[in-house]
Image (cartoon, rainbow over all chains, first blue to last red; front, side, top):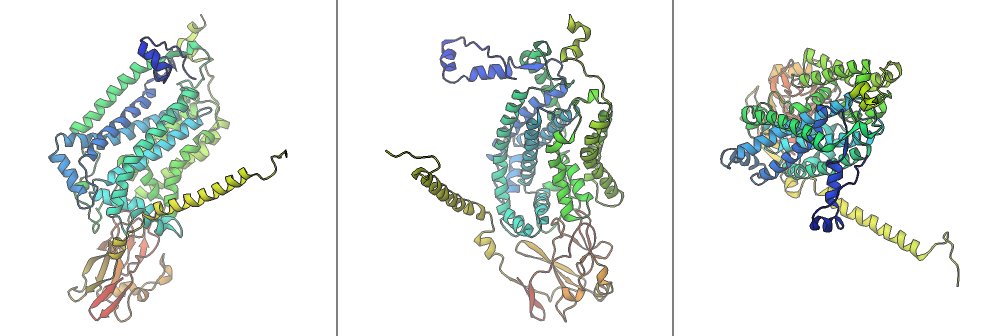
Length: 410
Length: 175
């Protein structure tokens, strides 16, 4: 659904430009007159928020690199130097480290919104899969960035995560040595992670462009899940979506600033202010909060290889969601059973996250096993069966009818 | 003038296949160095040469840590009780069955030399801890006994042994 090409260049320069590179009309048709469903709610503003967070991470990251030294003997001190000596260095680093957390927070809201309203369903499967790819790239980028300060948590996160690949039969050890560039996590590992941490965000930008392109081909989903049928169902992007996105962005940035200025280390771990020591593992190593559910799944399985398989499967299963959900009705508004299962699933994800931060012993392991089973059951049992057994509510005839009721027929 | 059917082989087909073949070889030749550069470099390999450790100062019951190839090596001067604990078990009942005698040099039963890296995900276990008073990994709760064998937890195998030999009564060479 591309916008109407109504752009008329006014000045002589823009007329000249339009005949050579019609970028102004592209922006105009994509972000000004672009038709959006008139019933979008605030859950639809997180795409714009994510774009802003991506830019914020790029800008702060590029600045951090101006002060950071990627070497095992100097990395930790260069970060401390940045925090103490560089003008506003503390601010830029806290913006970047908390920005990563806020980026994931926004991504999770965005993903759960897609699940609630069935935004992954026909014809938006490719749009959804591109989103899953962005999410996987985000996880890789976040992990490698966490290693760069070369504190104790950095070092042992790098050790544990790279060791996941040692579970591969036969070639596992060789793969891990290759990833490390040595016989343990060491300077070559740090330097390649730095290189890739700088590269991957630009790969994310590339996939985001594809994600937005796919979005503009199929059009946005909306809270009813009913595809738009006429111009009455739509409003132009500007001012309607522009002001809604901007308002929510401001609210989100206040939350972000609250963390940066009042709780800058709340989401981190004190052990990461101790320089990396290959001889001592901290007593409680846990990943950052946004990886905790997957960490709980890894630890729930008593077998090393199967634990790693379950970890990766729990992420990759998202890409198959468009085909695992067999219901023709998109929005949970009209799916009374799915709506309950959705909230159970959200609770299970939060529960797994809580368990991921707990020690792997006793009742915690048992609970993690139950929730891990449910996590997969949601995708492999609940969603495929619901499509056949659920009695859905009647859908509105159109978006405008759901918004305006009887008045839409006038 | 001859007519050429498209089914016949032409000089363009030959050029197409020849260019493709050279291109494939070239791509492989370029890819190999790009992958290989990530493996341990010459200085890292050289730094992995054998090291000698003097055991004389290690008291009974003490565990010392030395580094070889960036890996912590635990050298445990075991007490009589620790050796007995390690041997008074039904080997067949262990997750990774291996008698204690195979994990030490014969006649040197008190010296247990291990690579101190948990076989689960690579954390460093803590000595003299866990329900078998051997080693305990704080990351995911693997428990090893006084022979460094896995007894419970997610680790799949026993703590590995580095290659080493006694060069004299109180000195070993690791590597």
